[in-house]
Length: 221
Image 1: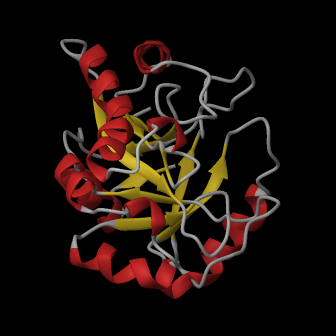
Image 2: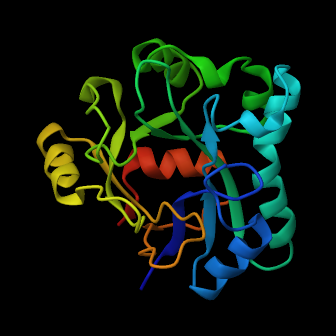
């Protein structure tokens, strides 16, 4: 198909406790599937960073960034782009949000990024830094559908084989409230994952271009 295919939702085992595949191998899997690139969205919350074994933010941030750094190193010279994202959770509930537009400097400077109390309290941070927030698998069991006014979009297709994400309900909700739609594999290295993502109109090279394309709707599921 025309366009540049990117994975929008993936977890590597070096960082995410739920990950079952290392960053370098994941790069090869996606290259083999014909993808142009991937966004590494490891978990950003206390449980997600528990293996960092440190309460110092500098070390916790380095632990979080390691997955994307390893994937980028594995992609060098292979015509494959690796971008940094995150799946962030706030203390108010177990909801997950895909956050795009972050870079290493942002992660390193934003102390206690893993411990924001609410989505509402984080929304001004996203706006100040030009970030985009998409609620991930919003109708999966245990999730609470967030206030649409606090979101930039919603993941309406999630390909994880281990959960029922009720994708049809998510698509209905996103359409009802005019939220940008998103599709992602939610890949952890598990067999049975439905590979998905988005086709961008342009060849995205960095996180700024990613946000611009998503914000302008220059993509298709």
